[in-house]
Image (cartoon, rainbow, N blue to C red; front, side, top):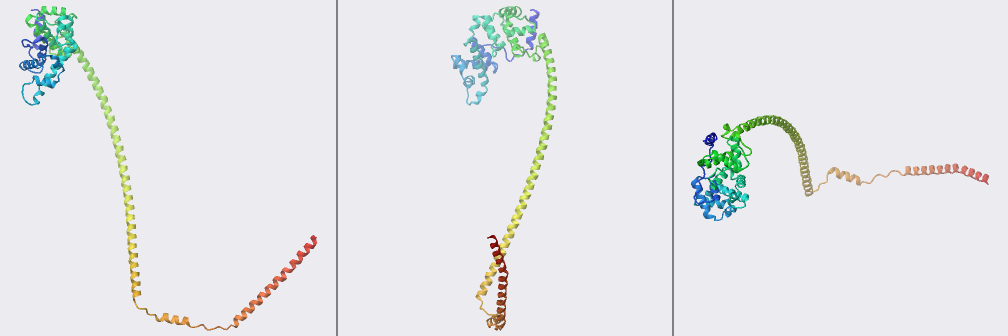
Length: 384
């Protein structure tokens, strides 16, 4: 064995497979073998074989399986029993079968792998482009189609080139020839499947070398890891700056919120005091109105009482017999007596004096008016 073969064997020992190498049941097609390998992702080999046999019987045409619901497929692959709860365990496996059949149909426009036999180089590339199938399962299917050579896919070649086990090439035929020289016949499937798992999990187009178990033996991985660490340190500094900036913003925001809360508290306090003053004012008004109403009611009651007392007194007075008071009787009797006649001489004298005075006044008025008439007459003669 060459040094590369020894190195590959040591590296494969570090790779932990998700499940043992698939061993397809006898008499199954390439499509069914791939379906069996997909079922191994979610269940043990014995259960996967039973599920595949159940799918064979339930779906003579796998196109019906492709378009079926996951619930329906789960009922087929689940063990017989009662209750719907038992199907929940097998729904993930049913979805895996659906995804596998859909991807094969979309890439090949059918449900078979005849396109690989028609053009092996193009077929290998097409098969490697099936993301759900992946590099490991693609290598397994290629090995089933032709176990005389080591399966080669672009993903496998990329991983082996990074590990220094081969030189990268775009021709899958040349890659297969190079691998056949260093890989023992009995190790071809293990080689393709094991490094295919590495390609699928850690060594993709965007590798995550810092998680890969083969990092120590991969020069490319070490460089990528170093660059990744530098990038992480840069990102860490950026995160620290961003955290500091965010802390400042949060502090400012907290201060702003505090100011707003204080302002709001003051506003609420002012409104509360205003409401309290208004309540006191209304209470005072209500008190005055109540006092006024009470006084009015008291006055009305007193007036009513006085009126009732007057009515009662009037009723008692009306009901009692009338008795003339002695003083009033004497006054009435005195008023009825005729008054003593005064002598009429004085009256006569007064009347005579008034008449004399009247006559004298009329004579004086006549004497004063006559000269004025003479003057007016003279004036009139002059004008003529």
